[in-house]
Image 1 (tube, rainbow, N blue to C red):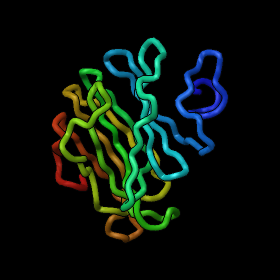
Image 2 (image 1 turned 60 degrees about the vertical axis):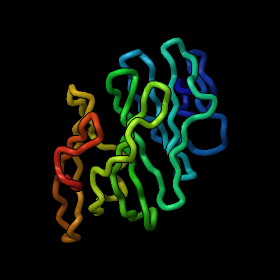
Image 3 (image 1 turned 45 degrees about the vertical axis):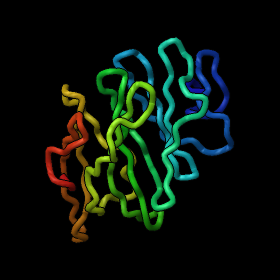
Image 4 (image 1 turned 180 degrees about the vertical axis):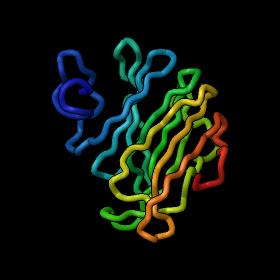
Length: 181
């Protein structure tokens, strides 16, 4: 459950079980919506991201968590950020290549209160590559207008000198800066 041992594992006295599988469910990330519901996402060993909503009264919203998966890339390290209307934006990585040195691209996807996608397509924050394999989470900062700011460092020009980048995602999924920050 959420209390005790991460996303999966023994159900605590005051916890809510979100999974019941034999996989390692890693790096749970949380966001609290304006309706006091909790969005929880985590990565599993199948290189998928799972997302679940826990209502303010402790009820698990979906019978099965949403699963982000693709045959073309690994969905990794999701992070939710709450926006108005009991909605949220999910930042995640699309990894290709070897796991110890992936080509990592950063995307965002917006979900409404019913846990359905809002934007017609995912927003690519950066597809430049050069981000290291140890970048699991990025800072997500609300902008007060249903979007968010984030930043990261990468070595997109492969000169062994990492540079810092920033990106702003607007409420409609558009970017304030060009792809890559």
